[in-house]
Image (cartoon, rainbow, N blue to C red; front, side, top):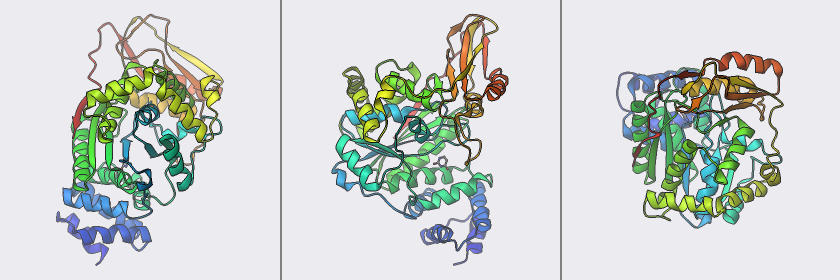
Length: 433
Ligand code: URA
């Protein structure tokens, strides 16, 4: 087989066979196929698309390109969750302890943030002492002991995705449904998930700008899951404004701590309860999503979820007392952004707030950037709330005075205030099973 023939075949709109797809992925990971040919191929996929059969084979070939986890030692059904990425999206940290407290183990590998979207691993790194890297043995032992562990993705899990994603990032081929769907699903298949709950976000702060695009992506991922015998549930959720009030690493951990003690913002709770309830359904501990939500609420009310979170922090070497005492490092310089006029907050633009938090130091501008774990933004108001002239709309945090001044300029066009009560779309658009 020759790669040039396979590029030509896809360029001309034909389907690739199972053998051809495996040849491409294996050849690329081994270094036999150079980046320039892979880039050309990715571009043909971008324009020509892939059939479901091709996308399933691509997912499998990528999942099999490196190590695969064997979670059979857990002795029970294993459910994983994935979010396509958003601003202020701390749902994993909130639903992880809730779901684990309700009897479904969580063994999660998460990513660091890039660009305007945050990453769970960066958020956890803001807890003093917390170890984001565990050996596979430690990881499994912790899941067995307390039902919850979250670590950074290990070196050789789905190397094909790592390599291809980096290439797509610089060749304008990220935004292709078969490429995104196979990238996400290959990681879930490689960790051995039997149940997969996907949070597919749409809106200004998400990868997919429109609900139609998000629906098409969600459907493809659910179909891949079905074809590979994994129960897959996709929730379409709105990401036009940040989730919750905190955007930034330690700021978000403090918000999670509040939420686990019953003081969470309504939007964050709604999305977390929806996703968590589907995880309980997929974990076969409740018969339906409504019972799942009731069970999760009980875990909040009786303190079981909060206790689970503290046990998880402690078990992974983190200082749980610092979380209880709210002693996480928050950036020393802060500045309020005040409303010039009274009115209803129309919308905080999620993308612009994500960029603002990144500029303040909370995110990486390049893969190599160091982040300021204490930087970010706290929204004093959310869309639909009334603000008086002179009241704060948000508070900016940074460790650097000059950066704060830069943030001040950016913050000005992230939000608008008007006389009309804004019409807000529902947060959960649809669930695709
Ligand atoms: N998230 C992923 O994991 N992969 C993609 O291709 C896009 C978003």
